[in-house]
Amino acid sequence: MKSKKNLKKDEKEAAEQYARSFKSYHSWRTKENPQGWFYNDHLEIPAVNKLLGNVEGKKILDFGCGTGIYTKKLAKKGAVVKGFDISEEMLSIARKENLQLDLRKGSGYEIPFKEKFDIVLASLVVHYLKDWDEMFQEVSRVLKKGGYFIFSTGNPVMESIKKSKQEVDYFHDGKFCADWKDNTGKEMKMHYYHKTYEKIIQAIIKNKFEIVDYKDCFPIKKAKKIFPEEYDKYSREPLFTAWKIKKK
Ligand SMILES: C[S@@+](CC[C@H](N)C(=O)[O-])C[C@H]1O[C@@H](n2cnc3c(N)ncnc32)[C@H](O)[C@@H]1O
Image (cartoon, rainbow, N blue to C red; front, side, top):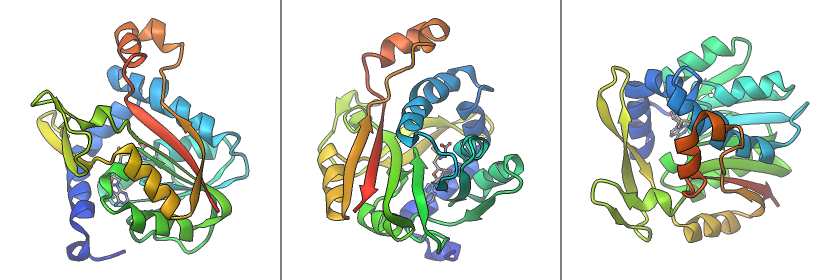
């Protein structure tokens, strides 16, 4: 792992942002926070699970494993899972919940593993990395030939709406920010990098991957009863995308 002062600006910023918000993130990502439970178990996770398919016996690398939400689920389903994340604080929760697993501190620009995997999964991570060519080359290095990179990220159109100004800035390929809560419940800004569909698809092709599946993350039926308002909103408004691409 690179020393902290050699981290790229985006890696350093992500690590700092998650040091400030790892506790609130974990409660948001689990049933602990009922509103968060909608976005996760009823919207993003079901779509990604469909792309993952049967994971039993598969060697999976959880890229940006965070607090280990997927790590735990995949291990329970019989996958051989390892993971890494840039944030020590996020990893501290992941390690508590996944005691026997190999979870390392490291970056998507310099993946801290030498072995090859069947699947690399990056759930809601890639928008923190500015340089996707560098990221795809690293993912390719740790994937077997024919292996899959499955990643979820914001819908490029919806995430380009600058909420504070009520304007859309889709073609501006760059840094955006969202309103988050820190560990004490105070408002904070979370920065991420917006990419257009064109930029995403070009990066996939340029780095010798092939798109094999894609999901718009439509809410699951069960959510209609438990979260009627959210179900109504997000069955009209696409929030997340999930991609399955194959190393050629
Ligand atoms: C929204 S969280 C997702 C965590 C986890 N994948 C999940 O599904 O709950 C984003 C994670 O990406 C990590 N991250 C951001 N930039 C990274 C980078 N350059 N390399 C590795 N991890 C990074 C953050 O530390 C954070 O844990």
